Structure formats: structure tokens, C-alpha cells
Image (cartoon, rainbow, N blue to C red):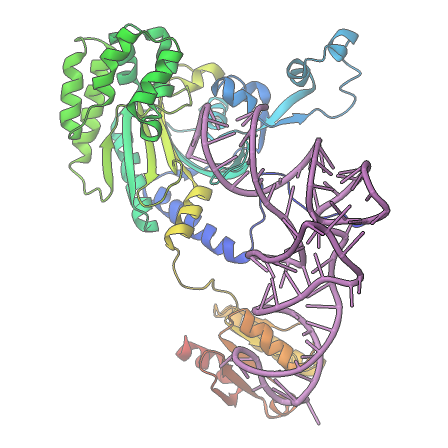
Amino acid sequence: MPQKPSVPKGTRDFLPDEMAGRNHIFDTIRTVFDLYGYVPVETPAMENLSSLLGKYGEEGDKLLFRILNSGDFMGKLNEEDRGSGDSGRLANMICDRGLRYDLTVPFARFVVQHRNELTFPFKRYQIQPVWRADRPQKGRYREFYQCDVDVIGSDSLLNEVEHAIIIDDVFVRLGINVVIKLNNRKILTGIAGMIGQQDKLTAMTVAMDKLDKIGLDEVCGEMQEKGISPDAIAKLKPIIGMTGSNSGKLEELASLFEEDGPGREGTREMKEVLDMLSLLEIKNKVEFDVALARGLNYYTGTIFEVKAADVEMGSICGGGRYDDLTGVFGLEGLSGVGISFGADRIYDVLVQTGGFPTAVSASTYLMFVNFGQKEAEACLPLLEKLRKSGISAELYPDSVKLKKQMQYANNRNITFVALIGEEEAREKTVTVKNMKTGSQETFPQDEIPKYMGIKS
RNA sequence: GUGGUCGUAGCUCAGUAGGUUAGAGCGUCAGAUUGUGGCUCUGAAGGUCGCCGGUUCGAAUCCGGUCUUCCACCCCA
């Protein structure tokens, strides 16, 4: 009984044409990461659940893919656990591992584990898939690639500046216009304190983050629902609705905070980052946005979010500073900052903007037609010679009709087809046809590399 | 996780008052053209109409469930 083949919800296959586009993205990002002095690492697809749970907030825990233990895991449970019907509780007992949800938390684990083998500040990049049991939508997948760069073991705001430049550099190279939004968690903390709602910080920021989407009134409405007093909302409204230049907004904001509080510190940091950035030639728009919050709750300082300027898509890059992510793994006082590029969304953006380079994916440059065992054998030394000189070449594997072999070459965008039939084999010649122009010529086999050299 | 939506040939889609053999374009394959692709012409293959069940004499069509797609919420890359 043949079953209809399929892949799990939210996952995808990638065909060669798509891979060309994806590799273009990965190559560009990797080139930039290398250029700024970051080194690559990889970590396993699965982590111990204990490393993952509790790092992303309640929502994150729900979206973790859990891996069922091997062996007789049910036999080890007592009656009460087995029959409890509490699937959440049961899952915790029969799953010890899970698929990673992002690259930052595994990296924190990695840093603590290998601290004695690393040189700090440690600048690493990591390009690997992550998994989230989210409900799929446009630009939202259950398996997708993140491209992370992080510096760990340095408090300097130079790192934030560097990451902003990396963002700009990557998107300029990819030909995507973006808006780089910046904020600082300390500013948000300061605001919450100022309006007397420290305990409602999360509810406040979650609501504020929706400003772009639902507008000021709706944001205020949501905050009211979440139990923030009307008094506090009234104070908050002018802050959220603040407009003007980055420095103007910052100054206005700073004046509202008390001298030594986190709010003042946040504005000071933000100003420093923006001032340094103004010394550089950033092509994309950099915007200080008080309403930017970001969900992951381990961020403590600067936060980043990048959106495509010309396409409606969620954020295509995001990140921030986390002061104590390694603390939970037993290494205190190590601050890090990092950003993550979402390769799959970037791909979707490029598809929509038509931004992929037009060059067709390079495949074989020259193909030998197969006229039979003997003739094919005459091609082998030539194949070898071409490949050694860096020309990608292949021999059609089966001795089938010429028409079919030509069609194959045509479909695969192969530039040259070389024919060594009975006559050519006898005369030690080869006929090379240029598939783009349709012209062909016959010459001694020795001259193939020369011919290719001239033509390439 | 909540609400909605989609699913017909490899691809893009037609096809309902429920009624014989479910169609088109593109692609594929074969031939016209025995050593020459793209263009043209001719022909062919290819479908349990997502899956399971129900209503009916009869279901691609109506109903229920399920899976998938896409969308909103939630959250995020």
C-alpha cells in the first residue's frame, strides 16, 4: 500500500534552485562574520531539557520539541504518575532531551562547559537550524536556520556598535533595505519604575511592542486589561507616542528619569551607542524606538530588531545584551551581546523583492556525451584533466540517444557539450558545442583545456 | 494553544440543482529528426478528486472527523 510521502508540519525540502538562493544568504552572512573576526562553532541539535527549560519564559517552554526517552521509560514510573493524566507533568518524566529552540542558550551552556578552552572575550558565530513547535504561518516555520554572532565576556558597548554595523553590512550586501531598531531594557525598566508599575514590566513591554501593529489606543487598552492603572497609562502615553530624532527622543526621555536609576543608565548607554554609530557610514536607517521590547526574557541591556523596509515580514534579525545568561549554568559575571539573522525569512524577503542575483546556479560547465563504452573511456582522461584545472565537467553515465543527452545538458544549463564518437575517437579529436550560441568546432583532444580557457 | 481557511494530474488551475469514460495549460515520455538541445507539429502516459467515515440508488460535489496549507490571535527569526 503506497503511502503519500510528506514531511512534518512546518518543515520543508529544498530543491537545488532554492539551495542556490539559500547558500547565497549563508555565504554572505558567513563572509561578513569572518570579516569581523568571529569564529565558528556548532552544538548538537538536541540539548538536555534541563538546559533549555525556563530560559525563554512560559511561552518558550511550551514551544520546545521534546524527545521521548529510549527504553522502557514507562516501567520506571509509579502508578500515580502514570495515571495522573497530566501530560505536562508526564512529559517532564519521560523526556530528558529536547531540540534546541535557539542558538543563544546552547551557546551559554557551551561557554560555561568549555570556559577553560576559550579565550575571552569570545567572539563566535553559529549557523544551524533551530526548532519551535509553533503553529506555522507565512515566514514562520517549525524548523528554520538562525545565524548567530555573539561576543561573550565583554561589557563594552563597542560590541553593540559592531553588531549594528554587521547588520548593516549583511543587508547592504544582500540588497535588502532595512530599518535597524534599537532600545535598551534598562530604559523599559526605568519607565516601569517611573510610572510605579515595576511588577508589571512584562505586561507593559508586551503591550508596547505592538504599537506598530495595533496603534497607541489599542496598546493602552491592552495595558488596562493587564491591570496597569489608568494613572500609569496616562503617564506612559506621551512616552510611547514620542516622536522626533533619536537624540531628541533620548534627551526628552532622560530628563524624565531620576539621576541614578536604570532609566538614566539605559539612555546613557543608548546615546553612547548611537553617538559611536554616527561616526560610521551606516546605509540603513537606525532608529531608537522606546516601544521596542522583544520577548526573550534574558535580555538586560541593548536590544536590536531589524525589519525589511519594503516587505511585510516579521523581524528578520534580532538580538541584544544579556548580562547573566551563563549564570544559570554556574558561571557568574559574564556579559554577552549577540544578534541572530533569520535565514529563512531573509530568503522570503528576497523572493518578494526579486533580490536574488540573476546568475543561474553554476553547475557543470562541460559535459561529455556518452556514445558507448569505448568512446566513454576515451573521455575519462580528458575529464580528469579538466577537473584538475578547475573546470567542472561530467560524462553522461548512460549511452542513450544523443537527443536525450543534449536535452539533459540543456535543462541543466551546461555551457559546453563535448562529443567523442567513433570518428573523433579514431582521429583523437573532440567536437565541442557551445550550447549558448549553438556553434561547434572540432579540434585535437589535447586542446580542450586551452579551448575552455579561452572561452571561460 | 484558540478561531478561521484551503486541499482535483509532477506544477498552475477549471469542473456543484449530487448523475455515464473528471478536463485544460505547462511539464514528462515517444515520434516527426538512426551523431546534435532550445522552436514547431503529432501522439501517449499520468488522478483511490488529501485521508477516514456518514447521508444517498448514486458523492470530486452534501455532512462529520482527521491531516495539510494559508491567515488572525499568541509569540517570534
